[in-house]
Length: 213
Image (cartoon, rainbow, N blue to C red):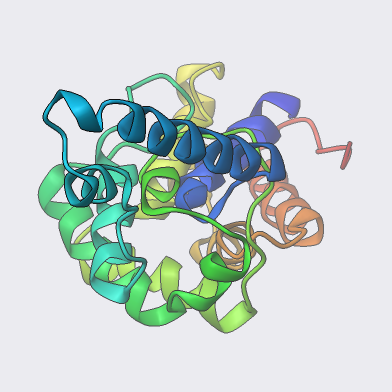
C-alpha cells in the first residue's frame, strides 16, 4: 500500500505550478540582479539600457499568463517522472479553468514567477488553497474530458496481479477519489481522505489494508 500512497501523492504534483521555495525566490532575485549588472557592463558594446531592462523583465503574473503556465506544467513533463502529463489540448483547456478558479493572489503571496509555475515538477511545498478551489481544480479535468480518477487509478495498479488490477479499476469509488484528490490539489493534508479511499477499494478487492503510514 505504500506504493499506492506514493503514486497518489505523485499525482498531486500536477499542482506543481502552485509550488515554490524561499531558496528559489532568493536564487531568482540573485539571478535577476546579476543579469542586470551584466547588461549594464555590456552597454558600451551595443546593448541599450532599455533593451537590458526588457531582457530581465519578468513575465507579469495575471490570470491569462497563469492559465498558460498551468497548461505548460500539465503538458510538458516526462512520462514516468511522477508528474501527470496530459495532451496539450486537454492541458490548454484545464489551465485557464484553474487560473479562473484560483486567481493569482495565492501565487503572488508565495512569490512565484510564471517560469516557476510552468515547471512540470518541483520538490518544494505546495501553495495551500481552499477546499472550494481544490474541488474546482478537480472538476476542471472532467469539464475538459479527462478522467482523472481513472488516470490516478491506472497509475497505482502497476504492481498488482491482473485480477487485482481489474478489480481496483472497477471498484475505485469516484466520490472518495474526488475527496482525496481535491484535498491534494489544494495542498492540504489528505491523509484521512486517502485512507478512506484506499480502505474501501482494499476491502472490495481483498487487498492488504492501508496502514496510514
